[in-house]
Length: 499
View 1: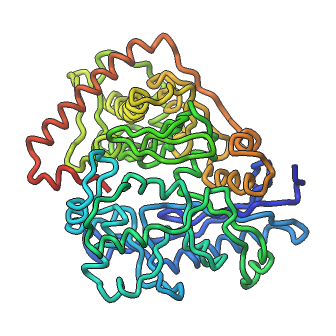
View 2: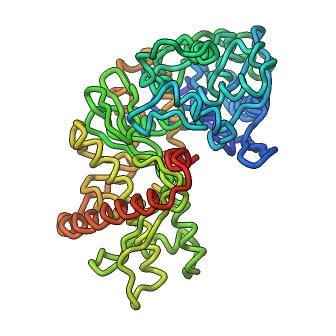
View 3: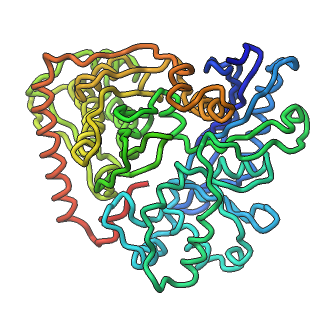
């Protein structure tokens, strides 16, 4: 094991900020810094950013971290993670051709329908939507043919930054495994779709594999010259790995404004409504992002004017025991992604009574978010996955003891929370530590570098009641989908996933 004066530099590119950290090989965070980011919305439905802002943010936050690391300290490696479903377009000389469309940009609706006609999908989680990179590239091909003619390389945000650091263009095997569902390709595809597909086939590395080394940069980055850079992966992978989710049988929940939930399995599964990904040397993932999370609680806290601040209300209300007569909440306020992939389905409260009060509504919203996670994990398990033995939770929503305990009870699983809130930078450091051969694999690295702060055990006395409430949740979901089917204006609108 390396000494206390050795560090791994990590970068986490988010939608609203870029976070940099210097971590020791044991996973402890030595220094951190954040640089804000802003997304531009020049037209309704558009969301984009100049990729140069990412580079400027990396220099700002990474520079502040490097200045905190003593000159006597050794930077062992660099690893980046970041948001996905955003594409950086480069010409043959590596010059940025224009703004990068962000994950919620849905300008490519017409192009998505055209591409989907050539590449239909049985699994809605794998369908071509306006948020799919193929639809984005089709939009460029149709609407900006001059730019499309100059286009030579398409990279994810962290891969663009890796390119700036090393001069090499590549992607990672986890993020790009989402495109495996396109294979085998049908014959007779239009030439412009073939070219879009070619642009989405970069050289791939596992997240822990060495991509290259840092080229010469200005101070304080001059001390990184020759330091190895590892491929890294998307933010949800790094955040889950940084919470300790690395082996088959573990589940994870990234509890943010909306939540990402998954189950790790020994073999790769294909389950309708769920996203299948490669994960580690010995595990795959089945699950996906939802639209439900802290945003639902924020809405409820405001709409029903609960007393106390949001965090206080969540802790107060979340400690209440379940009751059969309390409302069941379907958390589809903005449609839902996993596992239904419908932008037109809406949320609902079921089982209201005259005695229902503001605190009851918030309790039901918190339970509904937990039920959405149960819905995904139940589908993953019945689709062939191992029954999970624990849930690793991270993100802002994981800071609530009451909500963590409720999830343990709803899911019937122990919930383990990391002591480090920024688990994304820990996950990136874990990948680099494996690449540096400080640990033999991800499992060993996570065991050494992830510190579990608290374990929430499910209360067996509540299992039967929550099973009954889960059945009510499923019936409410079926009713909401039936209403959406009856009210859909067009088939395209019904099948488009929410941003």
